[in-house]
View 1 (tube, helix red, strand yellow):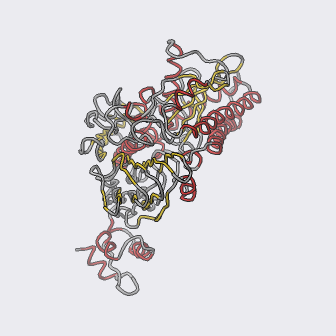
View 2 (cartoon, one colour):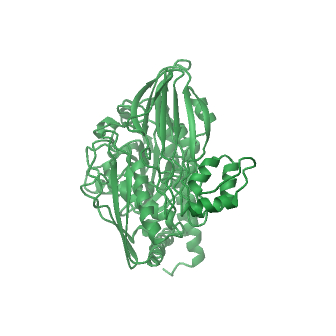
Length: 580
């Protein structure tokens, strides 16, 4: 076949991306659960028929699933080949959420479907959706003190949920018998399957128009170019080894920090990531399975080099040594509910902290780095039904060489957003008494960190149980190159008028609540970048005028003195403050 011309290659690259984007859109529009329908906690992609490697992923899908879904798809292919899984037929859709088979935590449920052309599998379509409950010891699945994966919920190996296009009633019954609010899951299941069917239809349209061979050639060429582009970017980094550390507050069981120790070696056109020296496997649910650890490195590098197109080729120059014997390589039965939403972000933070030394003009200080997982399960006496509410929340991004950090941005690992307050109040018996910017939370720097979110939610009726698996409550997000850390996460529960702070600060489960009880959360601000005393004094004055910092904070953190009356910058006093 003649070599692909540049225009056709570009058209096919955009077309494959569009297939994934339409799957994402279909999934969100059809889903019942607010965490998918409103927060977009989901992702869709196209994967190789041979080894499950990534071909394309939706631009609005969670970045953490970039690496994860290719490993789970690969596992399905391997299990079919060795007879551990039933062979596929047209119309089959496998369901799998087993973390140790290329996954994340149990709530991230993956569907995998073969696409046939001429009687052979041309590729696989896969998607992941965060189900608001998967059973386990607490509503929502975020068991902060779980010591075994069985306590976290129902674990599914790859099984056919749809056979020749028909939902298997027996598998569906098993699932519904093990999860809460089971009657609502059919909406998410149908939405997840519909997204794959839309993808199949759109992909077949492309193949019919351009031909299977041309599209296959384009896929191979796009992978080759992504690898080449990543190598070119890496080649510009000075050779050497860059070290960093990041810390998890605790594992939820033992109230001591966990360490992520990272050494990044740059040599020629490759980067090697070595996590030797990180903490050993932990008792609680902050272990990370290998697929999540790998994906965390990949997504961090995507943040640094966003120009490289997404495909398996972009990962080829990134060598991640398997972190055996650490909590970053969890094996059965280690609990893992915090791996995708929290530990993954600490891994990315370690990558940023190492790479900012090598690429100070490209890499930011640490972002908030927590998904703010807050699960609330209870019974609504007015509606006469049970519910499981799952709240995620954003935080501040780190400052960088050219500007301040983004305020209330999505988590490092995702493009998901907090569900609208109005939707949450409509769906659940709660009232948001406060929902605003968390002033002062951004770390001081020449370019300060962005600000986190502050909210307070009240239980209006019935009894409920609250669980939290968050992070950055003990340590704020790291500043870079002289910048200060962002403010840490805070959680306060008010029960019967009594204030309760979780012993693990950001983690606790099964807190009983009644009508009138409240939960207050403040998410972290991003780390500051550069010396705070080099920040333009007029920018500091503007931040104070907007209420972001107090005049006292301006003086203490930035060395800027403002006059008491009109908040004007006192240049002479500021000079003395910064010099002294």
